Image 1 (spheres, rainbow, N blue to C red):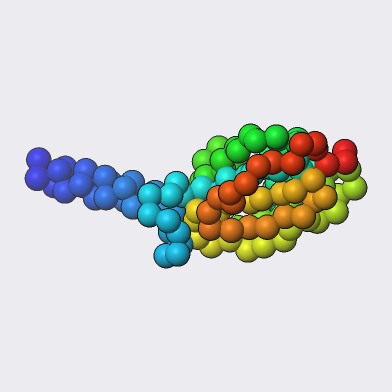
Image 2: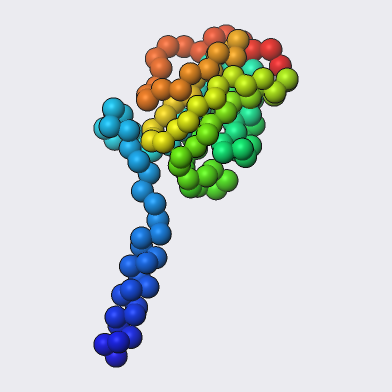
Length: 131
C-alpha cells in the first residue's frame, strides 16, 4: 500500500509540473491578465500569426479587444515570434519576439502597430482603415 501511494504521489507531482507558468513582465501593472490584448483603433483587417501559425483574423474592431493567452486553444506557449499581417496584401505591420506577458497590441487605421505593456488611453478613430 505504501509503495502504491508513493507511485501515486510521483504521478501527481509530474502532472502538476507539466503546467507551465506564464512569465510576467516585471514592468507590468500589478494584477494585469497574462495575455495579449488586441486593441484595434480602426485598423484594416489583419491576421495575427504566432510562431508561424495564423491564430486569428481580426477585422476592423471599433473597440473590440480580443485576448490571446499563451497555451490556450490554438495559441502556442511562450516564447512567441509574433507577426501582424495586413490581410489585403500580406504586408507585415509588426514583427516582434515576445517572452513575457502581459502585452497590448495597438493598431491604427493606417496599419501602424505597436506592442506595449498596457492599454493606450484615448478614443478610436471614427472609421476603419482601408480593406
